[in-house]
Image 1: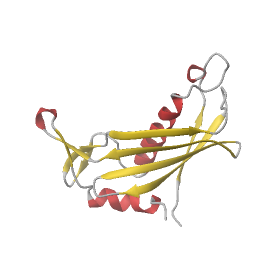
Image 2: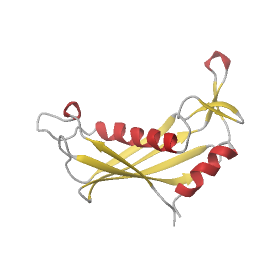
Image 3: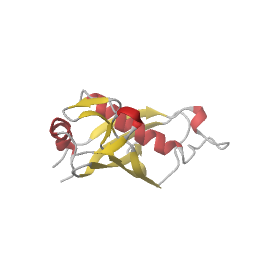
Image 4: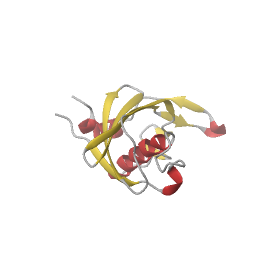
Length: 141
């Protein structure tokens, strides 16, 4: 069984609509913050990440979210992150978001490992072995 990374996040007032419910767009911010927290937990940074293939970054190429229930100002989200797919050059992250053990959303993002070259050229590259090794425990079985 794979493990998942957990991140906790309190809802801020600015993330809510006039009814005090989290605006749909904030869930994408929560997913990205959880991903960044996981990278830090692994001793890495999302940008710039110095690896055996040079300086890499992880631009998103897809993002989705399914909303299951409302989340309100000052509630605390518990966000679980797993890796649905660890490809040669890309990673698909899956997120489950809970408030008081009730699932409120599911999300997914796909990111590609890209080398940053002089002149701001971006090219996709294989995920470095040292990064892959740190991610492997989170790959969904």
